[in-house]
Amino acid sequence: KVSFLCLISSKMEVCYGWRCKLAMPFKKIANIVFNSLAIISALFTIFGLSIFQLDESKAWVVFTLIILLLVYVFYQTYRVARKIIGERYPNGVLPIASFARYSTSDGKQIRYELFRHIQIKRPFMNSFTHNFVWTGSKLPEISSELQSVGKVKDNELKDGEMGKQVSLGFKETLLYNSCEIIHLLMEIDDSDEKSSPHLAFDVKEPIRSIHFRVELLHAKHDYHEKAKLTCQNLDKLKGPIESESVLEFDSVSKCFSYLEKNPKVGYRYMLKWVRPN
Image 1 (cartoon, rainbow, N blue to C red):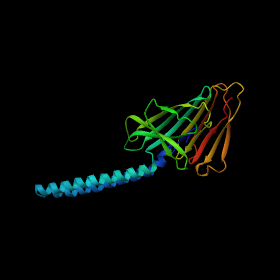
Image 2: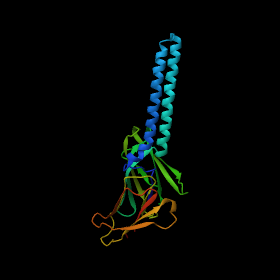
Image 3: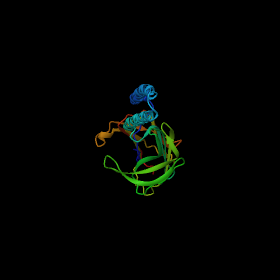
Image 4: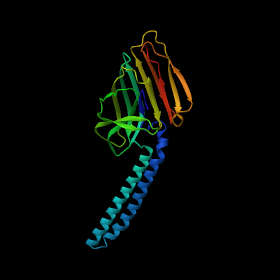
């Protein structure tokens, strides 16, 4: 999750190695389909010959039974396929990458912008739910250039923490395997400086990359503070930090920037910095 804004990863899944990872579920689906078609073909052959030997009324009864059998087999195939895909993609999407940008020119008015690249893993989808945790005292104003924004609702997280969620509606219904760019813009009033200066991302499933960019445009020339990037096991958040590294502040672009390629699954990546005076 990202928090300053804590962005909750909605079951992040990635492309790297996906052919191997996805092979088994789709092999199961393919086996069901082809085995079913083989059985149906055999039945059509047998009953096809028998139909010609029956009178018209009985032939129609047999034909109706075959059609019902065909519908039943395809329904069961659909049900099993949906179950397998649902277990692998609980949120119905395969996230590819995420980019979060935190920008402020005075330390009080903040623009938080998020881009997420996803692939739909449901028969169809009309909206995407974005979960987040905001540590400030005033709720952000949310907009999007690519989706329609719904109402912000309370959302209790698994660790007992209270968060928020907002629904982002697509311009048109997206079908299975369609790709989409999720865009979210939050205009935030943090004039009381109650928010915690950090970004965090929970990697619950593989993802290709996560990118943090923190722009402190009001930082003076004597600002030389360093940001800390920590990596911690999601099951041991109250325990010791497993790894920590330091990021230098770029005085030219006035930002901290960090790209993590193929981050570890089951870990929280958090970037913390010191507020400029």
